[in-house]
Length: 214
Image (tube, rainbow, N blue to C red; front, side, top):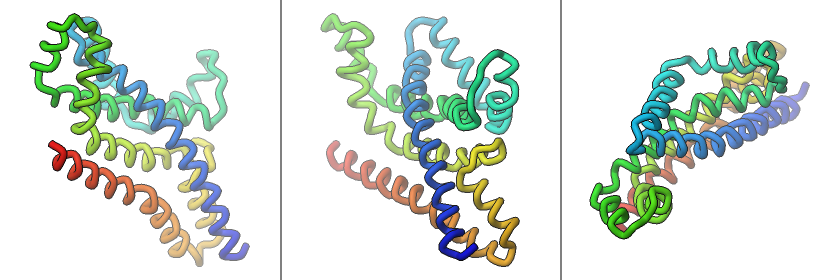
């Protein structure tokens, strides 16, 4: 296999990594927002549900969630491809990361804003969508950026469970072409940096921009 073919194989794995991470990212943000709302809810049972989920999953290794999704779910009557199982495991794990990012933003909004909203007769959902969340976005950006990086890096675990993503491709190619292992590793590192570095730069830029606006 030529060097161009090796790079092409790595790029195919990278495309799978981005697809997996992208889907999990969107689902984790949506689910994390729901969990964050539960955790700041004035209703005790909702707070308990949100807190229990976060504490249980956050203290469970990502590999265990992958193992459950891939090998145990069929015994529960759930049929899924390796890719679908990987999306489930990565999403379930990152619910916690994104929920904490959203919750930190919600908690950063002064309590007077919610009190004023209630005084105007707004429902809880109206208050969240119209008053609290728009102001909370400023505080959410840095932890959300960290959460995105964690999702991208966490997708590498999927390779152990049959999903041919970047790390899986790297391992296969390194085994076949041991004399080129350093070059392969360099390409893999550059591909990860190509996504993670811009996310960090964008996060820092937006954080400075929002501070100037304030």
